[in-house]
Image (cartoon, rainbow, N blue to C red; front, side, top):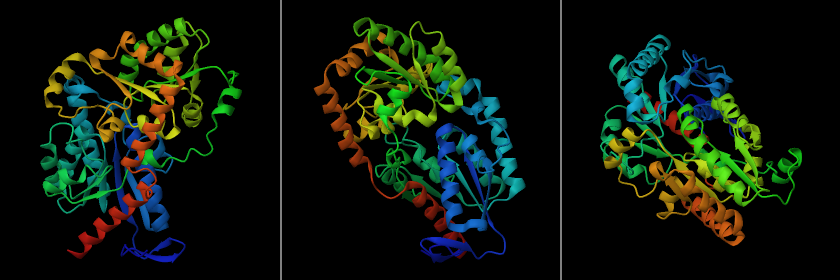
Length: 407
């Protein structure tokens, strides 16, 4: 307690601002996952400083709930692959200018740029050029250990500090001269105690003994467009083998209408799951079929065996593939250095190839349990059960400000 010069301990971890003027922190998040990280960081800072901190920035609905009004809809920045990036280049440049203009207008004490490498690195450079003295903090670095390691040096020249998710991130950026704090992944600290799979089934009229497949198609419009047809055909194949198979589909908030509309046209019943019921659905499911992303760690936290799929446009994939050095696509598999969860990427992301792996887990309880147990073991390697990432991130932000004040 007392790590920040702007706060004093009041007991039980509470703090009160001592500043005549509240700190102003700018948070910039361009995707749904970053919006959650930004909101959680804001809450942790608010818990420390109370009225001694205010927020401005760019974000989505979670940050908006805290009063952070975004100057534009971040859905415009949900871009996958090189080809999509080229098509959206002029729009991205305009949003970079808008974000830099917001920083110039608000004059924040620090800017935290969350994930979304292509967008936030441009914002960092624009703000650094206009206001060299403003501390810039990157929250989630690019996965340089998987591809394009030169990005570590690029980031080190653009920001003052990195909040990294995993211990394996730090050496890459520290070698490039960027001071780094490993805060951990929020996905490894989700409280699922209140999530009840039996209640989930009961509320939807699903027999407690019926096999249940949970489909998680993603949170970006292009992911939904590319992956839902693959998952629909996969479920068709599975139901031909297991007519009693029940299906539930998670409709993430940012794409809920799109997912619901597509699933409504499927020739079999699929239960739509909202974000509020997502963890209960994970616990209820016998197997999850998911588009690769942070959700893979959440599924593992629920103890459910999974199969992962992903694809982008073919041209982008061909352009990017030579740059990728990692053996696996999914963080769980990368941490284990083996394919714990089956991965079906790009040209392998077809119903014909995915169906047998999902069917194996649905029909072989021993195989499903073995994979679930191994997933749990890997979570420990990834840092499950450590300190709360948002709390560590808040401390790191305040430490950066304190160091800047002293120089």
